[in-house]
Image 1 (cartoon, helix red, strand yellow):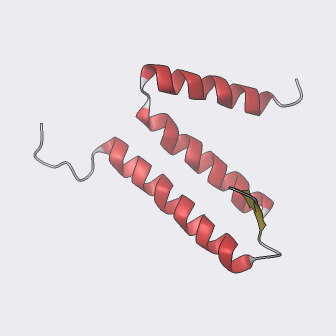
Image 2: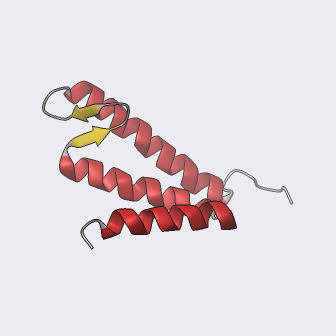
Length: 84
């Protein structure tokens, strides 16, 4: 199968929604972030490349990094100290 990673990701996305796997979204965002950094191009509403618009590319990397960090912290309940 040519695009097996995409198909597998879609299956896992469906499972994550069905079983309410909050941890999956942190992993999914991190994997996407790694791919974006390696490729030098991010696709959001339109393609943004590191070569053409480095400032916007960096801002988007920062935002996605913060989103990944937030997802991890939220899943681990880091700031819910003392709450049951």
